[in-house]
Length: 245
Image (cartoon, rainbow, N blue to C red; front, side, top):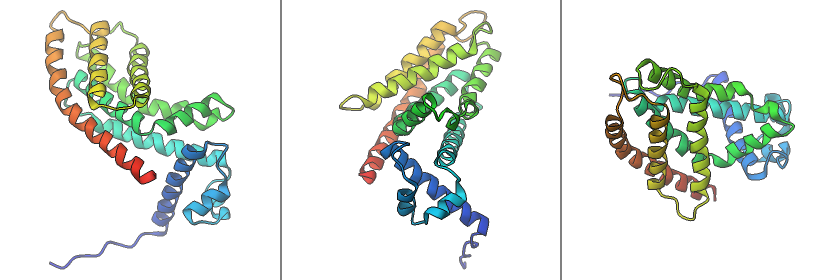
């Protein structure tokens, strides 16, 4: 059978491809040198473009950084949604989302740390709350399903559980990265402990709702695969670090 060649890229596709390469290179430079340390001329040299060409895409460095952040959060929000199955019970979905979030924070910690710094400074407009909400809405959907299924009390305030969920994972990511040796067993332990605390603090154990024993069985089953996936993420992180060095 004769192989058909791929259709040539349209002009728009070529522009989008160039823009994506520019955003990726710029993200790396911002991580390496900080927001104030990046010069558009140096960025142009890295990507093989003229400085004027970059300004045809983005009028200012602030516009460029904002585009990077939007692209980043859109990418990981899509990944978060893909990491959970709508057919799974809520606590299994939380387990998968926790696994994805912890691995993502560890892999992109330096960039996320930079965006936090920008939000606290004069460039707060670079990282809008809308982008963060698009990501955390994945958790919100799971939470509402848990309430509808009777696994979480309807009296629980959603943002309290959300802050517990993301706050614990982000603090734990910082702790794991700060250790000399990083172990997937530590990551698995974080997720196991987090889900157990959420279930004990906010879950229902009466009137036919999920019991602690049934939850434990489900978490144990899920964590067997979590360990393998997190080990893969850590391996990929090590490979990426070697390539960057």
